[in-house]
Image (cartoon, rainbow over all chains, first blue to last red; front, side, top):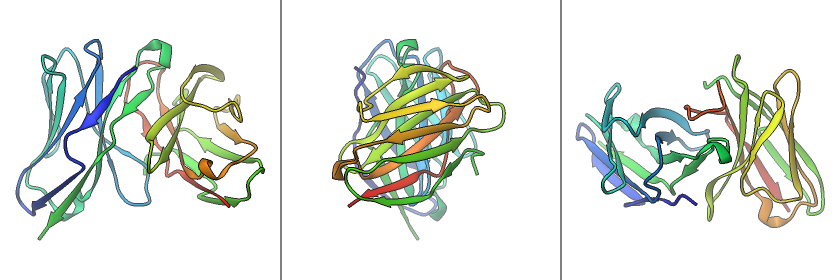
Length: 114
Length: 113
């Protein structure tokens, strides 16, 4: 099955800096990728997604980059704010046999310091 | 607020007992997924329903079952509970059965003592 891993379990950045959170996946046939933010005591919150026919997608202060050659995904957060402190998960969409369920990585805990 | 609701928020029960977790998807969403989140296993897919029918199973134990009702709300039933079943249980909904963003509820924290 799909294996999804994060490069760093924790990341500490200063307020105002840019943050980059990385993720690797194993299945080259994977077609759908998604990032979630989870704050303490809450459910995962959708941030941004990307399909395999794209290599970059931008949202509000966030950018997702997909490198299919090395099976790597990253989330960039511009001008990181204290409210961005949370655990970030990347997930890879399964195929029709799995009902397109998401395979989650372990998560990176982002801490924004003033 | 994702629009997905889950009840109860917290549940404390004893080993061997049975509990039911309830989920209401976002208005218009036909697909419901159940996930378990534990410290050692992370977020793991359990089961999916689409418009009332079971579509896919993940790492769901035989002691666990689910259903989706005509009004599209879903229930996850956990029986013969063990200490290791203590976890956060999330439901997520999606507008369709294909690869789309899923919106998660606030979760139910189950503690088995």
